[in-house]
Image (cartoon, rainbow, N blue to C red; front, side, top):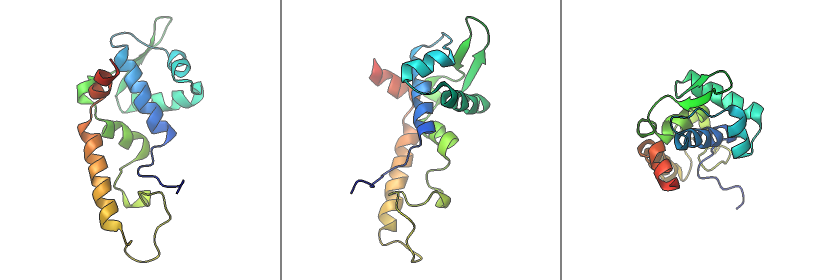
Length: 141
């Protein structure tokens, strides 16, 4: 059962959450994209695209220059993991997202376990909505 996926979190969404956490842990100090990429051991180009989306959504701001970099634009207590997830991967409960278990859609009108999957998706969505970036930062300390 290696293909079992309760929740598909893209690399971009995971990277966005990690980058936002790193910025929170460096609160008040700009962090360069290169420093974030090095710390997270990811491609600078991929990170730059993620930071651009976060910036357009006004979750981060950037400043140029030798002491420039990225900083969170909102307080961590005001940012839910769901907000970051939705920005990068779209609505968790969207019908166009496919099966939450990562399977192809059933051929019948209704999946045999659709009620179970729908309840599970709602629970995951509620958890992400309730979990704040500040919660992750607190657990890191």
